[in-house]
Image (cartoon, rainbow, N blue to C red; front, side, top):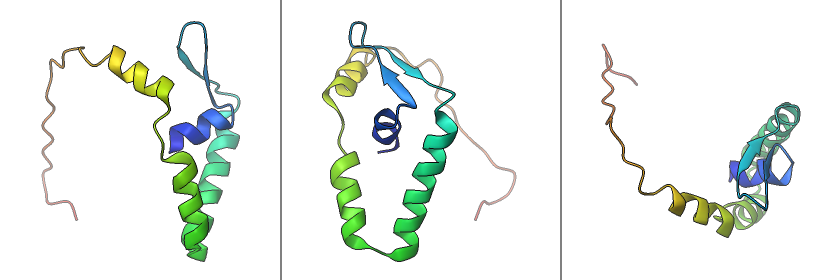
Length: 90
């Protein structure tokens, strides 16, 4: 959802010719602030309709991103990270 939001707000762009994505660093702070404001307002107000509309709009994997994932699906993963913490995390 955040990716779609960033794409819509110009903080992430996609070159139609190459299919490559780019992060627009100059637009990222404003987009992140706007995203945080929206999500925090949804949480604070408990507006179920607003949240449902958000999910309907942004919780969709765009076809171009799906194709991009398919292109890199055969890249091997050499390292399987195992995280250990010295004490229990609560």
